[in-house]
Image (cartoon, rainbow over all chains, first blue to last red; front, side):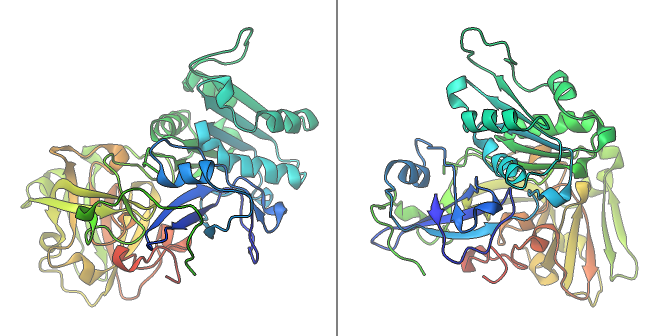
Length: 221
Length: 201
């Protein structure tokens, strides 16, 4: 969470560049999705997944303390974005930490109390990998027009009755509004996840221009 | 406005990277994928490459005609605006010098256009003199669809979003116009050595 004096606002789905500078002038930059909604004003939240060989992510997760100053640039990216005025229905499909920009949309929608029907299909390996679990449950409990669905692809806790496989055509046919309803679809996750989901959606008849994608590649960052 | 980040030292630097890695970039060994939408899959029988716009006689090649053009092997470093760079990528394709040979035009810019609706703008002179290709092989194999196959533009001296995936042609223009990412705030030119990532850089 950063206090960003002069932050000019952002759209849900946008990202920032984080730039770190070492004492010898060496710099490392990476892009991170904004997790907070525009309604949070000049307070900007990032959710960073720590990658073992990630020189920026490991610093942000392990070393940053309250009160540190970090150089941010943004907001960046204007395509993978959603505003309540864009309407719906809103279909969000996330794999792993790909849920982060989708969460900004969920939070924006909740903060604006927008009556746009929305669904989130969220694929993770195991229950402990679910980010924002309690918050998603809380938003869903308060709002019958928001429906999150989890699928746990590798390990399920005892008594788990939900989905427990990778996202496939049957799952998407169940989870996604039919193409005739022209849902606005946002897909974010690792490249193979996004490629697979987007291909299936096109096969199910969704117009490619209604499917917006963002890929989190294993880029070492 | 750079200031030293408390506690940050960065990983050990490789001196071999010095002079070869543009500012703000880091090396990857894999080949990340970035696209704004689903990957188009175009049948080779329906594929063609066109040069149109400010040209008296537009040019067009079918896939078979394109394959019959003189081809080149290209080994280049590539630099993505999302900060990754990859050294010594190996491609096979047709030089834009071959495709633009004999094209007499007053145009100074092109808009590359692709299946799926992607576009990107490039000065015409950046496509001439051995600086740009239409590539259809990567590492000796047909270019995979997720990396832009059947064919993509390859303009390695600019950020890689200028190397349009699934490219189907060039529209010659008198004046510069923004393409897809350029309309969303990315730089009109995109020189990695001047770190022209976003408009205003």
